[in-house]
Length: 45
Image 1 (cartoon, helix red, strand yellow):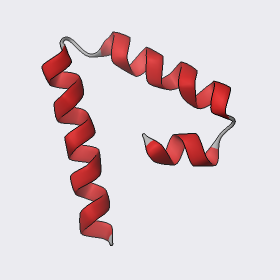
Image 2 (tube, one colour):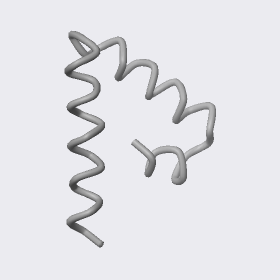
Image 3 (cartoon, rainbow, N blue to C red):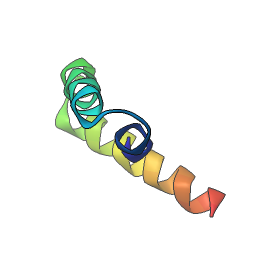
């Protein structure tokens, strides 16, 4: 998610983030997705 903010215009990234939140079934799903993205970045570094 952070990469979207860096690579695209902030407004576009924000809209995509909001859409992503709306598409997740619950807060737990959203938090799991964020945690997974952070874990992936840690493995890359």
